Image (cartoon, rainbow, N blue to C red; front, top):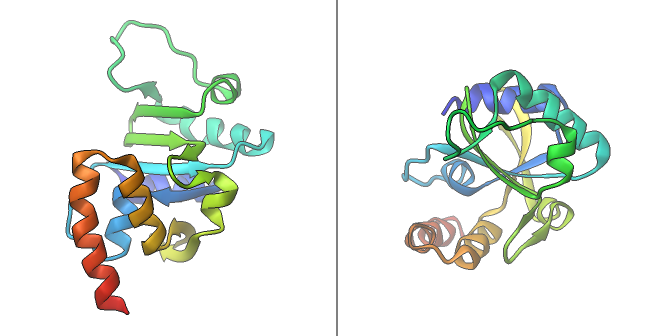
Length: 157
């Protein structure tokens, strides 16, 4: 995953998003490796247009789709869905309009911190909210990450 390039492109295209998931954990000090970029994005018409345009040059396709299956990437596609697990030329990018246990983009942004990453100011979940998100996801890998994240939280108090 080309994290730096993906983050810079999203920021330079003025996409409104919050980094969640593995990269968020890494920004808080997690030693776990992550191979995709997970973001929660604003569903305003303007932002959907910016997001569609930002990713279009990198040929986004749903992950796991057969190679020849037609897929159109545009604003209409983004308006008609809320969760996209994409394979792009930049790597795997997951787009979520809402996050289980946390709510909508507006809810998530209210629990986010502004941080300097790759020369850009981005929003990322604060550590307690990331822990809540991992618990709510309930997947084995997320629950395993909670132990480390709770340790990081305790060390920072």
